[in-house]
Length: 400
Image 1 (cartoon, one colour):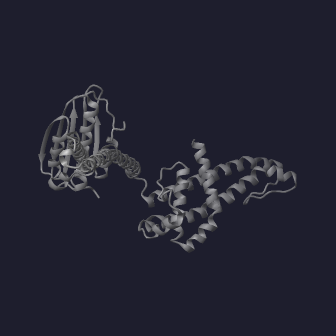
Image 2: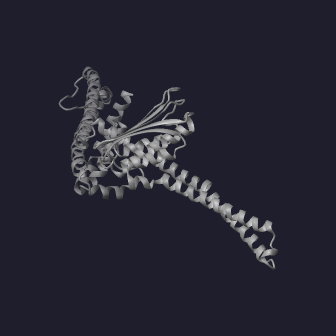
């Protein structure tokens, strides 16, 4: 692998040497050319095994990205210096590759030239005998090795300047960028899952009840029409009047159930109690509606909490209680909610079967990304047979 990376470095420096005229012309149209050259250099570094992050999104074409990059201050701090230093290093690579490889080739094939009556000259050295041409062969091999070493060093120097200008040497920054990319993908998947859940709840819940209401109302209309056609109200059979009353009551019951399911769906999207009364009151209302017997402990003041933080914590508690009722095989849960002036902590625990994992499709993975989006975190502690604890914390105000 090391030999492959060295070969890539030498090859890219040869390409940079050949591209020197293009780089020289690109200086004339700087700073327009700077983002393109800098992004190309970042691609070169990654191909050579250096951990660098691309700035251009893969789904964005060059023209709009360059136009956007020109309005960024980082272009002047990063891309333009990379263009200038890259051009200067390309001059060095051009001189080293040209004289080094050509000189090495001439020295290695010096005996061949001598056979044809040519005394190949390399710098001040001109062979005067067959013995000197034979001695030139190892000298040419050494010159070629030195040329490769110098080009490799130039490549490392190019990486050094690229990292210095882009500040990409900070491993924490790289880790945060990678975490951001992963978080974005997880949030996209979580939002799609939530959209499908809402669609399923509306289709299987309120929609079915409303269809039943429409059917009952149609039957009620038919029964009422038949009764109205009777010559006198007394002539209408008692059974028909009772059927009308029964159908009306069934339609009313279905309508009430549809309304309740619609309220549940809306509450799952964003509970009104959370906006009107705050996190603690909303969690208390959530606990009261839970089919479990929940022991709630809440302390502190939730007024400093921002809306995104309170929403993230609320849905963490809601999802944890839902998972307990579905999978834990217990009827009791505990919620410990502590609100401070600078942060909030919540712990939802049970004594169930355990074995839960945050990436098992329980919805907690999306909640973890939601907590991270407000600067917090979520952990699941669930040894098999030892119960489950969902622990989340976040600052009162998101870092953004």
